[in-house]
Image (tube, rainbow, N blue to C red; front, side, top):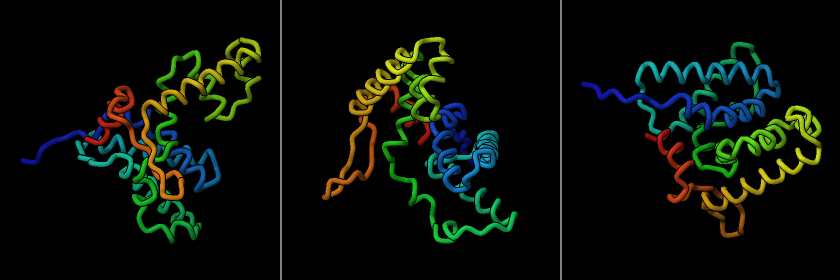
Length: 193
């Protein structure tokens, strides 16, 4: 009898990978509306896998492979050719190592709301700080202060939770979560089961 293992907790997968996949797709298609449509299709396939109890051993690699397949299908159906897709043999090689950016958004989401929202809007969504001040009904200096404090908290969390691997020449190679970082580690490890 086949062991039934659900692929994941869809809410956690979306929280950890949605923005990362969206950024990847936007770089490929250069169109935010089309990118959102493609990511929605990826999430639809995630839900299909969840409902079919599909076993996924490496969620990140699986999501990016699905994303790449959808991108390739989209380009083929529209008869658009991108040399980049023809040269990429295995998307898993592109994304299997964790970069620092892979942990930034989940870490921002762990910050207190007072700092999380302004920092996310400013540094991820690119919203001007004057607009953030209006959204929060606070002064511009207060908005700047919240973004700055959020960055400081994020930096402290990153240095506390992440172990960075460097090459011999001192270049960034990969980032790994330390065992002592319970909040982030529990979210990431649940996706790898």
